[in-house]
Amino acid sequence: MGRMGSLLVVNSCMGQNSAMSNPADNLVLEHLRHIRMVVDETRLDVRELKTRVGFLEQQYANVSNRIDRIEDRLDRIERRIGLAVA
Image 1 (cartoon, rainbow, N blue to C red):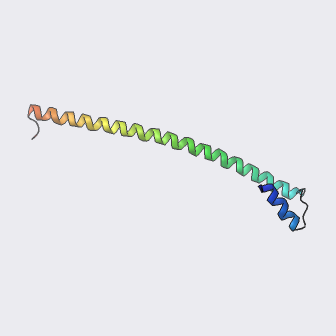
Image 2: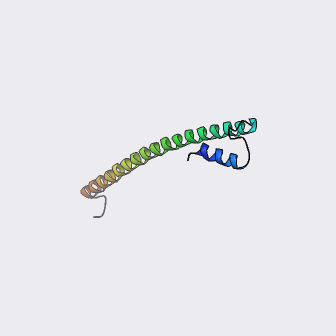
Image 3: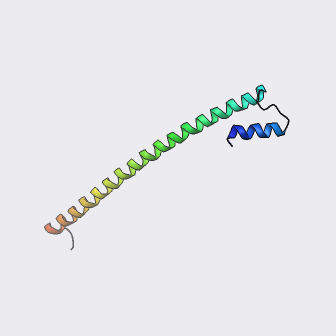
């Protein structure tokens, strides 16, 4: 049974109108729909941010690897010209 079906059963059991025609009920439903929309938008934003952070992490790893290779090359160069102890 869907959410609306559950609400209708609960309302019927409580002796309320199953159509939920009370203006206060409609206002609550309107607010809930808005909250759901905002949550969905936030979920999409978080997904996008996770993707972007993932790309940044990959780029950082690539730069870090390049720096390590440059450091190794510099060490070899220093050893060749006698600036560093082997």
